[in-house]
View (cartoon, rainbow, N blue to C red):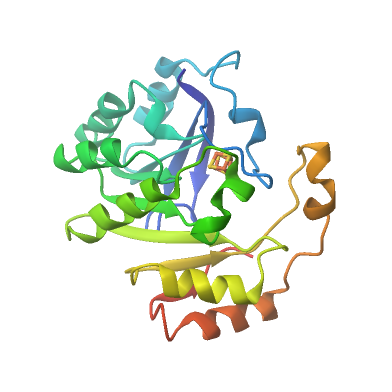
Length: 233
Ligand code: SF4
């Protein structure tokens, strides 16, 4: 498995930076609302040759200042350390997007000094993780990832939640209460994915919360998560 996609320019994926985003193949979760459903299988995907990605990044040196590694779940990619090290050697700041299920990998990457920013998904109330992200998902791993990122201060860290339509106001409040206080906590709006499983059609097709509702949720969560903000809507 390796890189399955590349977004050549983003102003929104890496706070304060102009970044390219690489998408790795394979994910151990199966979130019903996943926007990268085609990236979930660990094998059989068309991959982008690494040489092509590097040829692009070399050309963008000085124009882009960051690289985001997203997925799928990038912590499964065997070449991740090497790729991040090469990004840093070429002057790019690095950001990892992760579902938080592999704290041991995040711990190693932090120890190796290969990350400048980590964004961890906080998908749902911990007791709803299997229903939202797939049976067998262990939310204790996510808690462990939060804890190890909070125990250090060298690498920027945010948690983020996609506020899908069946995530209720009460559940959002509970999530804000059950988590440690994050240095940044972003609520993102829900968009209906193009690809989804037929069994999930009913919840996929529910009306997304409006910007006004999301802004109200942010205000509601501030007493528990004072660094809560609205992200993409
Ligand atoms: S963790 Fe991300 S990539 Fe994996 S299934 Fe969930 S939304 Fe999709």
